Length: 309
Image 1 (cartoon, rainbow, N blue to C red):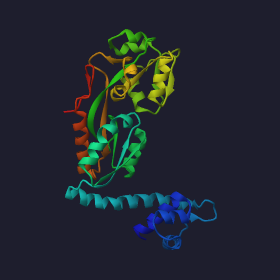
Image 2 (cartoon, rainbow, N blue to C red):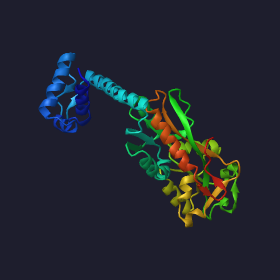
Image 3 (cartoon, helix red, strand yellow):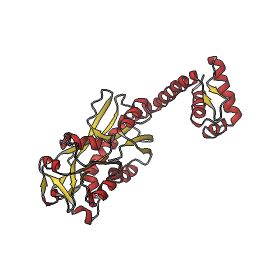
């Protein structure tokens, strides 16, 4: 069997249609079908159930496709090894970024990266932390940007910056009268938090010590900071925002932002990658470029984004 035949099998498994799969791998449908028949004959099993519509995988086919993806992924890594040895900052680089970081951080660094490395083709996708971890392990992603620490043996973390938490407290909130908020003051407010599964929520519960929210506390979970801000204006409570998100609010909304008293609780944001260390020269280059951008004076009142030393 060949890598090309495995790619054909993967394409059919993904598209469940021989004609569409052939278009995606740039061959004719008869050529693709013939090559898949050859690998099935060589293995002595049927990978695809052609009686189903759309085409399905047999039980053994499921296992074969899973292994085929690993083999194809590892084969492409050979080029990565060569490029890393040459120090070439180019080719395709796949980066995953968590939802609470991507909208604010990506516009800050993307143009800088593209100008600095014109031969680099970035493929960036927003995804939750768990998906980033899974795709790093499978070799689908080259790196991710996530809140850390993750404390995983297989994943290396390179801190980018430490981002303070900010309190969004409209006029109705008791905290709106405070110049600097102590974390324990949040216990007297109704809290609006991101829904379960967001690491920002977990960080808020941990850093601001909200684990003991009483059953009578009014709590709305949402996946959007904008929704939480709107609900806050309706008098339903206060919410927490990451510093970069708070900085991008309009003037009318920024007057409701309150910082924490020193030392400000903050989250660590890092570039994360698998310990295999492939494309490490590109990871290091991107890491340093982002840190350089962050070190530019991003200031809100007396609070700064703190870069790691």
